[in-house]
Length: 194
Image 1: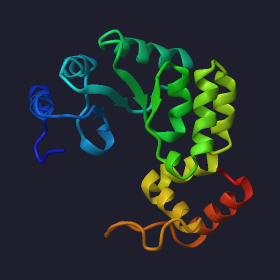
Image 2 (image 1 turned 90 degrees about the vertical axis):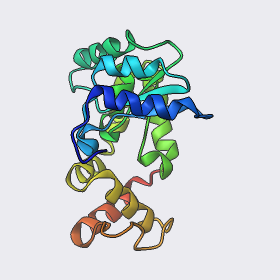
Image 3 (image 1 turned 30 degrees about the vertical axis):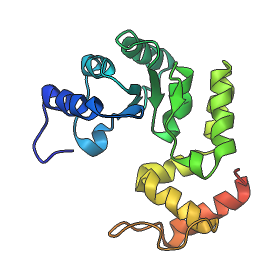
């Protein structure tokens, strides 16, 4: 993230400088909503050639299954085979996995690993419908994610489940309150996610 709009060469230079001395695998975190920088597939391809780059995390794929698959295939054609493509945006994860992403960079996976694993296994085994159906069960959470952001909702869930003390987020962020917190509590009790 930068105060000034970054160029492709500046972003590539940052990754080049970081990977020169890096001793662990690196995941390129492509999050234009937060960083206000949009990676081109060509830039991903350039960065993928640097040492220690192991994965590219892309934002959610298009809703249409064919368009999603085409998106992943376009990027895959520019990347070395050993490098994984991972999807983010938990509500879009099943679509991304169904489209050919090898990884899901999940927010809910830390709280509900079995739920995230079930979605991933369904998609990876070729059960696209099953993956979408499992993800669809989480629609109330996805709606809250869209409204408040995944960090606030997941932190609230951790507080409600007794896994984190309130307030669990650094200031000035707040977890959900009032009727939305109550709605999330009721939904968590009903679904009993694991």
